[in-house]
Image (cartoon, rainbow, N blue to C red; front, side, top):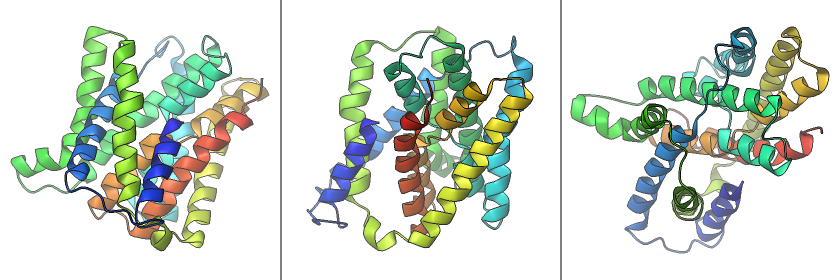
Length: 279
């Protein structure tokens, strides 16, 4: 959840608050950091007992991704990106919360991590086809961020290697600060933010994901407490939401009001997740 602090720092530096001038080279550096950040995020994705517990994952993927996807598509005038944004779950946030709560070696953790991984992979696959393209060279240039995510996913599965602690430190203390400070630094979230757009986006996101996960989990004969906890963990959108919103806004898939709303949804749902978890 440190990304929240870095993003807030960027907002304080940017036109939203102090309007401190950003060095011309910083934006390029932040973009590169974002691509490497996504590469390692793809590498970290896990699939645990997917085939062994396939009935559970089939139903709960439909609840965790399918229900919010359909809700977003219908509510936001058939906007495919908004459907994706509502279906996303933040794997890094889920992992961090589970570790903090000393629940990382439980069945809840295995299921939450696998479902969050599935939601993120499907979301980024669809997102790759939404980004603008003209010819091969421009397609690669416009999709390189998403391609970095899948390259990390591919290498992580081929080598089956855990990321070294040094890489995790690089991701946490160098890449994330560069990207999220840079993102907040260049947006005027105060002028872009609309309470009406945020409230409707927040409510649709929370309600669709919570109901989808809870109902599908109970249908899979999961206890009330575990169904609640899965809904709480998978509702966190975190850095994945902010990253996707950033690139969608740059590509003209959403307007400024929706971009600002999704950034705040990503932050607020991540902050809400830990207190909502029941021991």
